[in-house]
Amino acid sequence: MKVILWMLFFTLSIWAVLGLKNSIDQEEVKIQNTIDSLQNVIDSLKLEIDTLQWENQIWDFNLSNNTVHLLSAIIHVESSNNDSAYNSYEDAVGCLQIRKTMVNDVNRILRRQKSDIRFTYDDRWLRSKSTQKFGIYCKHYNLNTAEEIARCWNGGPRGMNKPLTSTYWRKVQENLDS
Image (cartoon, rainbow, N blue to C red; front, side, top):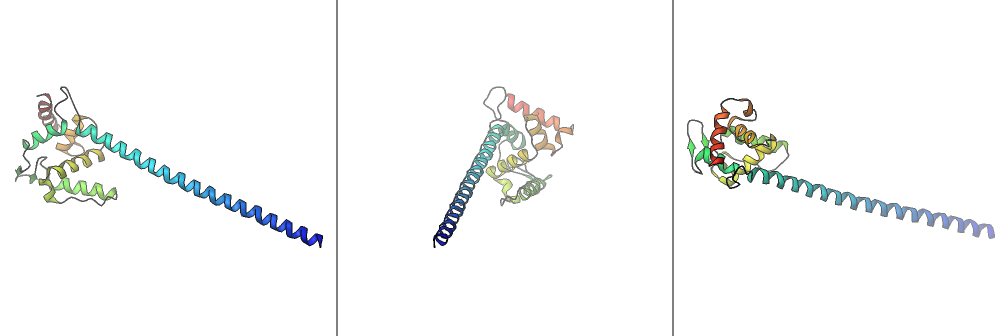
């Protein structure tokens, strides 16, 4: 009888230890899942901070007198600040004189990024949507300096290599300097 009780006690002890170990393992998995979830939140926040810092560089790209912004200078060169500007020869529309090929390129970029956002050709008339496209374009092509941004906006992703875009850059510079 003692042997049976000892075997029963031993079996229950092993079962209790294994149950405790399983409980500890489950708790460790929960803790690890929580850590992973929090790490994802941190990564997401870092991405948001990076995006905001990048947008701040684009929208508030100040030169010389700290009052005229790069985007404003480009809009002035493109359309004299006219949201209804239309160049029928190039089918360029709005404050940033956006062509259909630019809309197609930005939509292609957004598809690659698996974004649900898409732009229509009519969105070119809206300043807010035009500046959104401008930001997506500059970020995608990693345009960092004022000259890169202006010349590539005017001449496409390889605009820095095109001599004609240097004239456009001078016009933008004049607006920045004035």
